[in-house]
Image (cartoon, rainbow, N blue to C red; front, side):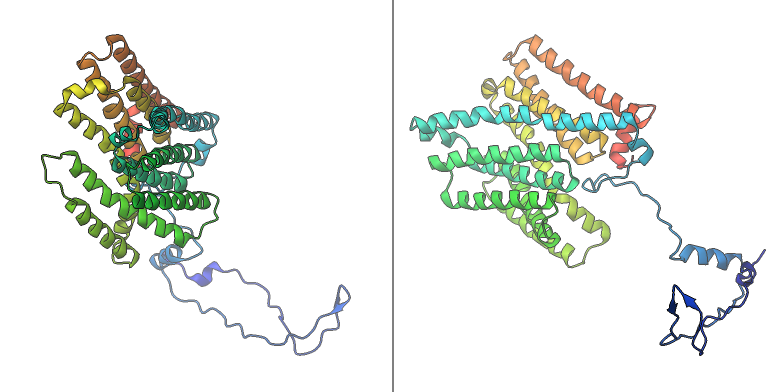
Length: 410
């Protein structure tokens, strides 16, 4: 069945829009003035149309809203996914959302306790004049961790996760304090310390200006380009250096990745990449920072394999604090469907915290009771996080939460 556009219009009586004579009628005691100019109104000529053309008209019309929400890809973790407003406004969701944010903020405590002993020890050695003791702390490793904290700070500032941004800010400041102590002892070259101080100052100012909407978007893009290039350059070099002296001592991996990173960023800014390519480049800074931290337990386990006697030098309390700090952020990462955040926190819990506790227990450095208590507590926490997430979203199985996390949908 076909319809004409004319048949859809109802006849209306003709009216005079204007006249060449001055009007004598008054509206609120003001004379209606003659219009300065009048434009001819051309009648719409009805065109023959059928059902298909009418559907095309409705589909392409700018007056009709055709947006269909799409799930956020797991790689694009910096782009927040959409949550159903009815679900978001429910009391159950609000309570768990508030509680997970507090959990993430509470991670400041174990992470601060994790770094504080090193700061105190360095200060004692400096006051005692024992500067050589600080040479045991590698400044390059501290700088890599600092770069990772800055990248993740930018990531969580962009997501408006203020509690986790506070954790990363604490990480930046505490790591910089250690670097300052190393520079005071001469364990870090002064030019590198000046550059590091400049990067830290700029990074903190830029991030917090962006959080309070005081930063020019163009300047923020330049900062994102910088941390992307720096992260991509550092990651392969750190991974390569882990296996020294079994591999040649060279900066070639970092140099190659630096050239590739600069090329990728320039192509992205010049519009030479597809939309998916641009999104991929934009997500690299957060993922490289996460991979840097994920590599730390790999390097530690590699050291444990090569030098089993060094395992006795590991602090069980430090491993437990690392597991607690990262574990406190897992429920929040799961609730917000942030695959990158969830992957980094879970990896650190399993391989850096619990994994090193396994090594310590295997070599009888810690008691069976200590190891079992840490293991049962960790497993119970993960089970609780998935059970509560399943309850909040109304799923039937915790596996659905894991599936939604990977797909990026809610």
